[in-house]
Length: 139
Image (cartoon, rainbow, N blue to C red):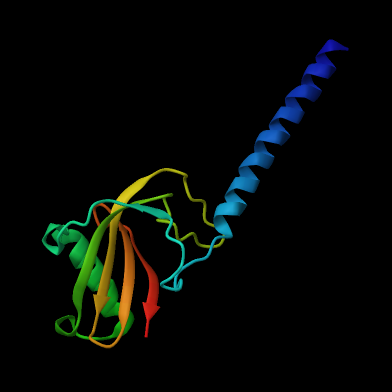
């Protein structure tokens, strides 16, 4: 009799743990992705405003490379107008995609604004520039 109660308790604990994991993953996956309005609430903590010269070359290159692909504009037509160090609230840089799990860890990185003189693109990156996400496009 004791053994069956222990098995039942073990199953209940397992079901509870799985439920918590599923609900936390669903919450992260249901957040807004890309093309957020510029006025949207930021999911980051801003650090003091460093100069544009402090943007690591790898981050600059990764952002401009993505902008060239998205816009079909030549690299010479694009320029970075702002770069600010950020601490993002999760591994998705605060821009979760449906069905994707986002680890709830602080990710240091950058918010970078690119322009072609008419439109602006806001990007979020991690510190190394290996992860680059478009936050919004302003026309």
